[in-house]
Amino acid sequence: MAVVKWDPFRDLLSIQDRMNKLFEQTLSRSRVEEGIAASTWAPAVDIYETPETIVMKAELPGLTREDIEIQIRDNTLTLKGERRFAKDVQEENFLRIERAYGAFQRSFTLPATVQQENIRAVFRDGVLELTLPKAEGPRPKKIAIEVR
Image 1 (cartoon, helix red, strand yellow):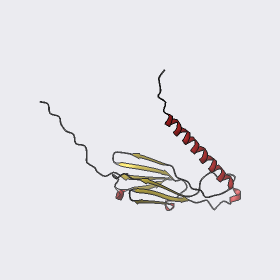
Image 2 (cartoon, rainbow, N blue to C red):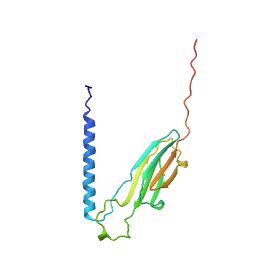
Image 3 (cartoon, rainbow, N blue to C red):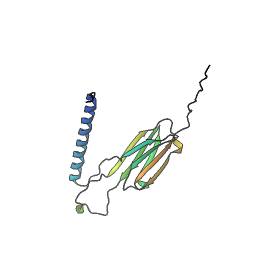
Image 4 (tube, one colour):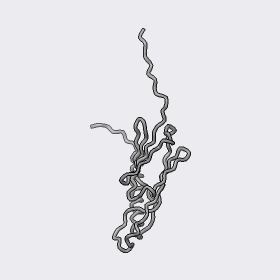
């Protein structure tokens, strides 16, 4: 049998995550039961790194390019937008409303190695993909070892 070291902080973080999810679920249910209400929401974002770039993908279903705004200020990238409630269906015809509507804003601190002037954004199939190219930095130099 393997001996596993107990980390009390890991358990505390797990409990905190569970409590946060419980409160979020409870609050979102109560808002839905109250009727149609604009609420704050935040799109899910994946960020990964390649040797040349940092790539950010944000899920923004139901939005158009005009609903999204991207700003960069002081090494902070801000993603703003709004998902509007559909006006083509009357409120009393809804049986359930689970999607969040309203404005959102997410901010991300950019590393100093990002070339801010060359950031590219593509919006396709409800996913916004930002490509942040890295600046060419000093490359590691390989030093040959002499044998004497």
